[in-house]
Structure formats: C-alpha cells, structure tokens
Length: 386
Image (cartoon, rainbow, N blue to C red):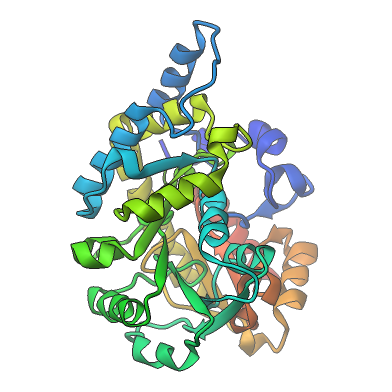
C-alpha cells in the first residue's frame, strides 16, 4: 500500500502543487510540502463517488453536515479524550483557514499573540493579516522539556492568544503532559486563549504519546480552541477540509459569526465533508499502515542524515518532516537548499525566517511521506554531492 508501485508519478506531476511534483522539473525529487505521495484510502474514493451519483450538489448546512460533526465528536472523545458536542464543532475549508479564523475572532489591531520559533509560517501570517503582532518564544530542536514558565516574561497587557502547534512543525517535537499543564496554567492566569493546532496529532511515533491540551480538564478546555484537518493524516489537502472546535459555547458562537458561513462567503464543501466522514469512520486501517510506513522512513532518514558529514538531525517525535542541521557545512539555509536543487536535483524547504522564523536558520526541512525507493534515491543524491 505504501511502496513505490503505489506512487503514481504521472498523476502527481499533474496535480501535486505547493512546491511538489507539479512545480519542479521532471528530474527533481521534491521532499518539500508535507503532503503524501500515496493515494488516499479507497473507502474515501468510494464515498465521494457514491455521493456524486445523484448529481445534486446543493447547499449544505452553514454549520456543517451533522454526520461529519458527529464523526469529529467521536474522534475527539475516543482518540483525544476531549468531549466537545457536535454542535460546537465547525467544519471549515482547511485547517489553515481555521487558524486564520481563530486569529480574526480573538485578535484586534495592536493585540499580541505568542507563537513559537521555529514554527510554520501560517501563524505569523494570520496574526499579521488581522493587524496584530506575533511575539516569538524560542523552542529550538531538542529533547529537553520546555520551561514554559519563562514564557511569562513576554506576556503583556496586549497579549490575547497563545498559538500551540503540537506536534511542532518543523522540529517534530511532541509536547509532554507536564509541559502542556504549565502552558495551560499560564493561559488561565493571564486570561489568554490557546489556539491548539492539532493537524499533525495522528502522526506521532512510538514511544511518544499525544495529549490534546483541551483534554487536561474541563476548566482548561474553556480556554482552548482546537483546529484540525485531514491533509496530513489522510492525504486530502486538495479537498480543503478541516474543523474548529471548542467546549466554550460563547467562544464558539463568536467563531461561527466571524466565519461568515451564514452568509455563504465561506464554508466547508459537502464533498469534502463526505470524504471526512469516510476518513474518520472507515479509514483507520489506512492511517495505521501509513504511520507504520512513516516510522520506517523516519528511522531510515534520520540514520542516513546523521551518517553524512556536515549534516545532523534529531529523529522527529511526530510529523513526517525532518529538521536537518546544516550548520557544519558553513552554508546558509538558502544556499544549501539551492545547492541541493541545482546539483543533487532534490528540492527541500530552507530554514528561512519567512517560512519558520529566525530560529530556523542553519536548518532545512525534509518531508519523508514518500516511498522507500524515492527517499533512498534522494538521499543518495544528497550524499553524492556532499
């Protein structure tokens, strides 16, 4: 299911955009955007086909299809130990939009929001897009526990939001329960909302265990807005489907108002929600197989990188991206990325401030959601040019 014969390069070169196969020359291997090279579960394809047979594509409920919300409720309850009613789950057109929606709902011009460094650029973009100010908290790659008590030093009267990315893209850190408890207590102390981006929460490698911050207690859940999606776990990036959930009723109503769903300006499309139902209810076997394959690729990649002179990495605890330290090469992240692209014909994401923040300089990010054959070929090319 996850070997090279199931990677359809002909289709990927036509459809896989966002720095991937459709945007690079045919002789380049893209290990860039975090998107699987494998087709989704057949049950998802079948569910979409069955839904489309009638030929009707009418407006769906502004708050989302109830069966989809119910499937998400069961997911949060059974997989995340977080009990949020279906009526307080809002399907949205991608987790990325969910992050932006939370920022638009909570922040006003001049407000401040805490984000990590390094972290995916969507947080900074969303905060600045609504006129607020991102304040970075350094969490460099490593296995040490994060002392969130130091975070209090950057909280001001303007601080309204803490953005938690867990697992953390690009370093792959999975936050421990004790770290989350400290962060939650700080948020309560200063009356802050936590935006918990959990799109990577299914991709966690043993023996590490994922804990949703909203599951810590009923009291803490009132200060948490959870955002999730289906692109990383089920390969549905092009369907643009995600969800925003909170146990706080008043907060949910504000999110719904700011979503503009009732005005049909935004909304999750019906086909994507049908796919989400099939993913959650019928495709767990596919996700389990994908995670098993990713575990093998993670070990292969981290071991191989650490054997190449000038490169080093810490095997990610979660996410299917590897954050590679290139400082010993004496090159900048951008220069090294260009060297790989031009000489090795391998595309990676450079650790530039615009992608991850200033803490990413001296690193590149490699996605390993591909076949063993493709990954080995890319690594051979990298090693040869170094």
